[in-house]
Image 1 (cartoon, rainbow, N blue to C red):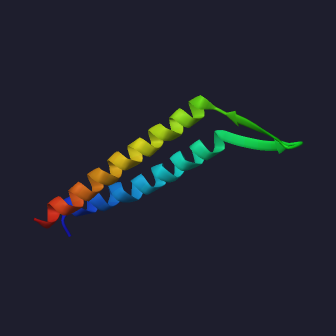
Image 2 (image 1 turned 135 degrees about the vertical axis):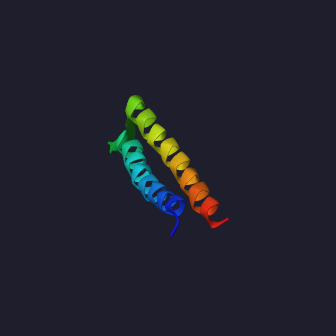
Length: 74
């Protein structure tokens, strides 16, 4: 197994973890409560932004992992 392929697989696994953290941060930053027929929505914009940054990093890591894994095949 090529070193480049191993690094690609590691990057893909890390991207899944970072993506999971990002999704949880976005979900935890938005809460909605229904009280007496009125829906009250509260959101933490800085927490959402941090979650989206994690998601962006996960996408980049995933793409880099795919590139590294495919590059080693040629």
